[in-house]
Length: 64
Image (tube, rainbow, N blue to C red; front, top):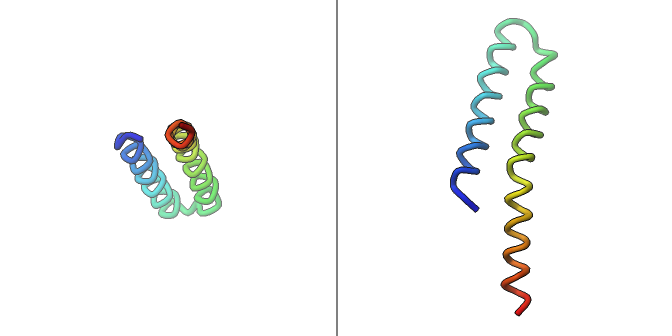
């Protein structure tokens, strides 16, 4: 796994947090949950391929 994945997930989290704050200040609280769920899905789309790669790597190490 690469450190860039962590930075991408942190960037998504920062964008979601900023957008949520802006929506709350604008009185659009009903959209904050949707933005949070969208951010979670984006973070999972970044993380899951790396997790699959890690699983494959561990499988190749364990299977002599």
